[in-house]
Picture: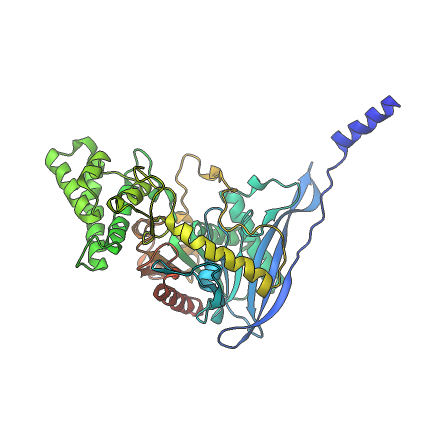
Length: 486
């Protein structure tokens, strides 16, 4: 008997295949009326993604890998309308920001920096919704929103540049195929890391499936991570952040009597010429040149000259956030430099606790958790992950030894698809993806004049999520509406 039990145990542990729980799509369909009066349908739920697996050259079938939460809006009897696929970034962010902040027919009642809505917040109609011009599909990547790997799966498999790109591209291919939308105009809209993802996904869609998109909406853009990251020996990001420092200082009254455009223009000119030169010279700068750089930087940013000398002309954004309003006992936000809060430690040399994210997370969390259940009819007991650190560490192994950069992918797309257009939105008070850094990348792309004319640039006196500001949201949606109608 002992031998029989030993045999059974060995078979179970070593040779018996692990059971895979069967999963299926769990979509809920609801009918609605838009703010302007037309009928539309929402399909909300988790789409099961499967992957064909092989062993010893033999197919083992399509195995479920992940359940991806999507919300699709389609106009009833809308014909062959454009369809826009949208997502945020992070990595680790759900699509809630674009979904309920800008694009959808309902939006969060969050208020703005000078008049934030108090709890319990709320939802209001969004008459300018992009749904007026295009069907919408909001996508939450793995570990964000309600999206998860299947039981027994490995989460970190999808917490990587290539795997995330391929997953989002597969969601778009599958939705397009199931809904017979291959002949519809198609747009991708991403925000922040979502802009990098959008370009990568567009490349993947064409390379893997032959699917060409009509346009890319890039909101708070980063296409080359090296323009944002402060590393020893890399001086470029210090110059590219300077106009943002000047704009935030202007918002907080540090440039009295001057227009924002004038302040930003001065900072851009100095960053492009004299500051760039000073940074490249290092210890070769003469004392007079060094003193002049300190004086100019202090005038542009309104930072104390002593601070600028102590940092040797080089400081990261989190140091700026702590320093700008230190004398007033405040730190400024990173996602949106218009926001301020008292720091936990006024003596700290840096600030990583972003008061802008603290201010806006509550309204968006309340809105999405109410909306999906009460208005879209979808029930799930999982926590809706607004912005999660569970995706960290995010793998960029594809770029090992090189910058994380998709500018070459966009170049290739623009050259091979001469109908592809790009819409870019910048926020002057965005400390996470400064406008001048994105402009730098576009300026260095190898494109002819005709291709550059297909890229439109839009600027807002607001932050990373410029749609928090009513005027910016209206201007943004009006421009995006034109973009998808063309």
